[in-house]
Amino acid sequence: MTEHHVTGEIGLVTGAAGNIGRAIALELVRRGASLALADHPSASMQLEAVAAECRAVDGRARVHPVTFDVTNETATYCATCLSSVVWTTSKRLSVGWTNRT
Image 1 (tube, rainbow, N blue to C red):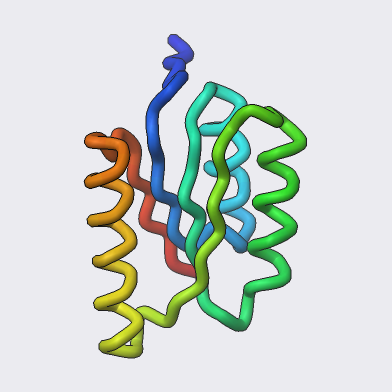
Image 2 (cartoon, one colour):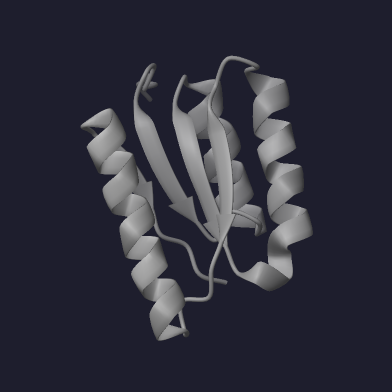
């Protein structure tokens, strides 16, 4: 299987505090991406732990954890704003992984 590198690319992983989201985030960082990691506020401690793991894999990677509740209309709007900020500041959102557990 061919391994694709995403060096310098920006990714957004939702459900990042869970097992699958964590694995995806770690693999993307290992392959060179910077990430915005998102999950529910009740998973904030796990999300911070995943962010720390990602930073340990590649200390140069930009990893930004953010919590929001997709069942809350205002929070969902904020998540949309987050995506817009990532897009506006980097001019690219190369990788997206939507994961719900």
